Length: 434
Image (cartoon, rainbow, N blue to C red; front, side):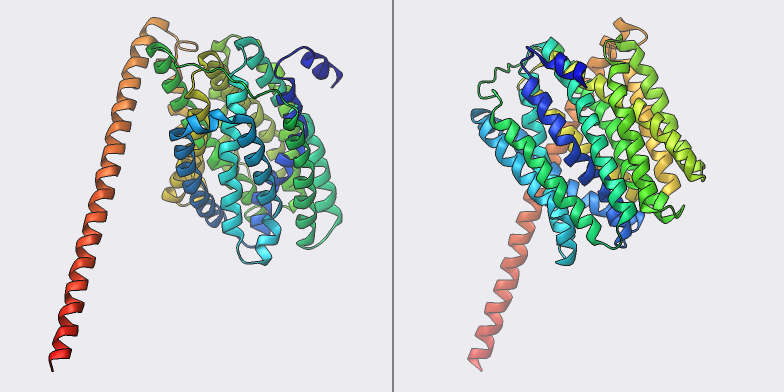
């Protein structure tokens, strides 16, 4: 711990590092408890997936608006960051209360939505640093956030094991929200008012699109695993809620040291993280002995930490005005995409197979089109341009199709209402003439 604090000395992003340290407890309790709490109050695996899909649909729309009007947020970054930062903590803290008010889906959706602008503006603050400080800040935020997560996991374990009833979740969420506000207070003293992000050249845009596609596939897989693994343990393997929390605790412990393992290594080493990650869904779906899931939790954390750090490090090198917002938008979209895939396949085992396939696609993409970790760098540059052009064409086609479909729907609605109005007027005139 002292080493981490010493590493922050003289670093421009130290306030952002301290924010992660104080926010880790809040994030761990609210996010880790969510699938457990939903399972305990009666949501099945498919129900939880559908709830997340609806929530992330709205979050994805908000991510698009955040990206579309990013120039407004950039004019008052600190002000908007603190506002959304605080609102996020309010709605997460009210999750258990919303269950008693029969409005849990609404509060859950709002809680997830407010994480979008918060994450985007945190990314802006990090990527506005120089490359060295940005990478150092990312690594330290990950490690110190994980250290704080331990306290959250220990607290959750103690409360879940010692207390009975739904009230224990109310206590935990209220406590987490209160502690989370300390990270908001830390941001009040952060020097993030003047940010200098620039537009990037074509080659870096190509790199950013390919890395974000890679992140989309990886995070979609992680979304499927994250939303179904714990409910599977509770509902199918009949473990107690404190054991499910223990799985989360093991992930938290591992997350402290995983960034130190990956930091400083060559980019090509990260390909092993993707290979290792692709085995996790298979292990989860085939091993029915709960105690072995603690080992899977270690493998899962090390592998996915490596893949996420790879994407974040490359994005930190690009430092364009669009990248922080695109990074958040892709992360949000991947959650929605993961939920849609999970709903489409239906069963838990097929969900895990889908998660593995997404990771294998990510591995293929990284080896072929991301020069930093590809086998043949020169060929990767050619493939990266092909993937970039296909992605941009696909995006343009999708947006055009969506716009034209929306306009067609509006026109058909207007025509239908006009016909109904004409029929109504005709009938009124008919009855008046009698």
